[in-house]
Amino acid sequence: IDKIHFSGAINPGMSGGPVVGHDGRVVGVNVATAGNEIGFLVPVEPLIALHKTLSGKTSGPDNGVVERQLLKNEQNVVDNLLKKDWESVPFGPFMVPGRIHAAFKCWGNAAYTQKDPFKYFQSTCSSQDEIFLDDDFSTGTMTLRSDYLIGNPDLDLSRFYAFYQQEYATPTREDQSGEDHVTNYDCTTRFVEQAGHLWKTSFCARRYKKYPGLYDMMLVMALLDRGREGMILSLEAAGVSKDSAQALSRRFLNEIRLKPES
Image (tube, rainbow, N blue to C red; front, side, top):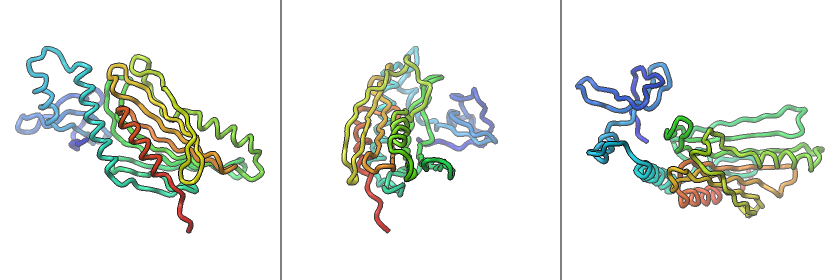
C-alpha cells in the first residue's frame, strides 16, 4: 500500500488525523510512526474517493462497504503475489519460499547447545503492514515460517517425535482477536507427497463475523519420513477470501522441492 514518508512528529493517538501542507491542503492521513520524526501517511487520494462514496450519508461506512474494500485490497495483493516468481532459499534438505516480495522482512534463528539432544533452526519472512479494524483486531498480514530439527543419533526416536508433535500442534498465529471478531479455526488434515517425501498438512481457516467474506488462514505441514530429522513449514494470511487462501496454499506447497546436491 502506497504511503508518504513524513518527517514531522507523529505521536500515538494521532492516527487518522490529517497532515496539512504549506498551501493549506490535506496531504495525507497519519497511519504510523517509528519515532525520531519518522512517520507515514496514507495519501489523500483514497480519502477523496471515500468522501465521494459517502457524500450525502449521515453515518460512516457500514460493514458491507468495509468488507468490499478489504476484499478488493486482498485480491490485488494476492494477484500481485501469485503472478511473481517467488524467491526460493535452501533450508535443511529442501528449497523453500523465502522473501517472496519486497514488502517482506526476513530473519532467522538457531537455538541449541552441545548438551541439547537436538539442533533447532528457524527462518521467518513476514509482511510489515497491517490494516487496523478495531482496538484489538487487525488484519492484512502474511507470514512464512520454516523450522528445521535435527535429533542427535543417540536420541530416543519416541522422545524426538514427542517434541516434534508438540511443535506441529502449536498454532503459529498469535493475536488478540476475540470471539466478537472471528469464529474458531476449522481445520482439515491430510497426508501429501511433495518433493519426493511424505508430509502431514493441516489447512485451517476462521471467518470474520462482521465481514463474512474474509478469513484468516494457516497452512502447516510437517515432514514425516526422515527419522530424527524434522521440518515444519507454515504459511499464514490474515484477511483473505477462501479462493485466495486456497490459491496461496497451492502455490506455497508447489514451491517446496529438494535442494540440489552440490
